[in-house]
Length: 240
Image 1 (tube, rainbow, N blue to C red):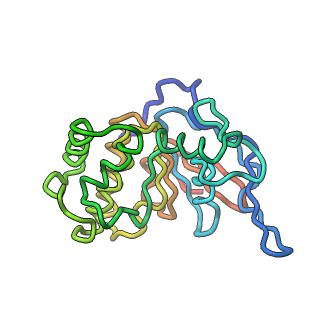
Image 2: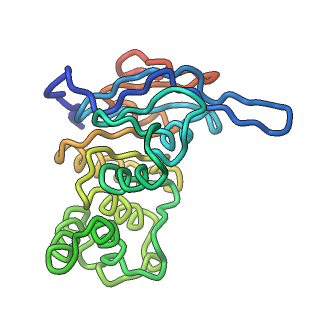
């Protein structure tokens, strides 16, 4: 897998400034992320390592605007999401961010093609153009013959391919992947990672992948580990 050549190192799409997230349960306050600072550049592929519960998913939720930080700023494409209303964050996320989840999150009552067309429709793309884009994406992930199938008729690997196509179909600038191979066997997971890497690189997307798997660190431009609420950059091609 070829690492990204970042065209413009002076231009970053994600800027996290003193990002802190705490949760309170009764009298106990737990800080999951503590003063996180990072700049992520266009077309960069970032991997987040860390044990379960270390804060990887929390960080992705903050970047996407699903959740708000206790303090600090999330700036994407020069827009500070922490200043947005919930509706503004939803609309921004719908247009600019694609998600890939461990458990696929496909809608069981929609066909494969309909699952792909949903984010297009939410962004105002309908009719023949939406159908054509869905057909192209299904071809890209090798599932053109499964367009009319329902998710429960697909294997886990096929469902994740659909999820990847859905995340990319509306051409977001940022892809967030949360344990995308965590529900797959090793061989299928490897195939999914290779597919995801190819499609993300091919379309010059910025991707952040949270994982506990250290086998895939070789694909990253930069690797970070979350430990005790701090974001630590790892040496190139090595795990922290």
